[in-house]
Image (cartoon, rainbow, N blue to C red; front, top):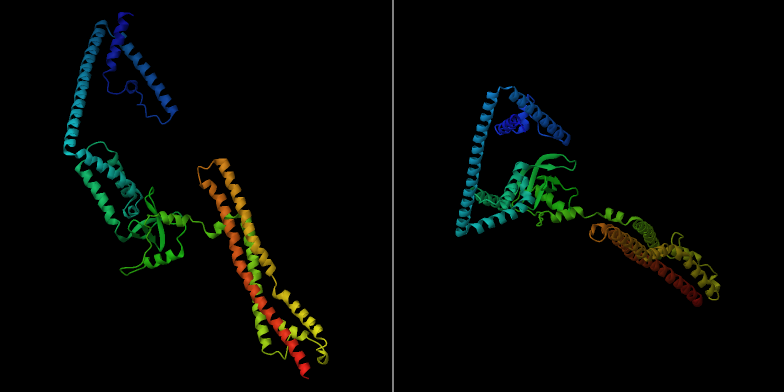
Length: 477
């Protein structure tokens, strides 16, 4: 390499250390180009790199041209100036590096001394316990219903962020941080024993957050407009439950929300929302029936048919018993609007031959009684069949549900019980529905049987008594 080229490279290398900006930015400024903006994509980054290279090449060419165009004595002067600046910057860099190393060593020494003094005073264990308490409190306060009482979501999340930062910190905590840790815990403890009314943002069922009056019972329950609320920790806001609690809880909540007395009953979820969420997720009877699918619908259809027939027949038997009772009060004038009257009307024969025709009269009366029995025992056979078929239909639904359960286990394994919940639910609800129609229909059939037998018993007694009375009159005559 020639002496001229060596001087050029030395000058360029020395001048590269003079600038404060990076080489690419310095090159663009020298060439009159704008500073490269931060890359927002891979294409932009690639274009910035290309522009930087072009700027560097242009700057290199300008320096080479300027150096070559200078006289010999000026070139020597430029080279000496560049070397002097290089030496100055190198010395400054070495000094700053030594200062940084010495400062870092001093910081480590001071930190070591602080750690030893803290251990001597027992502060290490104290600070460790404080960090542990802060970590536990951060989890509790993040889920706390009391956050809804704070003014803004930022304020709600700020104390949780502080506690988490305090728990994860490695530096020695300051007195202000320790005091705030005590303050946040004490504020939570105090608020847990309060029953307050305050304004807060509540997400309505339509998804819109509105400022409403909220009644808070410690960290357990929140009410608004006699509706139970749920706290969303991640959003730091309250929301109306998608489905409210049963009526017995709603009645208590209604009385409590508008109470002006000092002591009134209230609904308190000591699990802080867990039981409340279970009530909300509990399926309704309609949802349970839908879970039974086709088999459940068939069972319900059979039960409804049996219920309708039972109601129809029980009304009929009550009317028949009333008519028979009226006929018993007036046996001398039989009427055809009741079974007893029709049996009395069916008794025909010559009074002078009643003893000789007693067998015929008895058969005629028995025929009249048997004619009335089918209408009195109507629908009882269907009810007995429904009572027997209900559990069998439920068994079919149970088998189908277990088939679905085994199929889900085969497809996805048994790791997640929720995947098997549909099949198990179908199996159980079918069994419940089958027994649910069989047991009531069993009692209904027993009631119909008792009512019909009582009427038949009256017919048998009256017909036998009527025949005996006629024979006795004939003998006495």
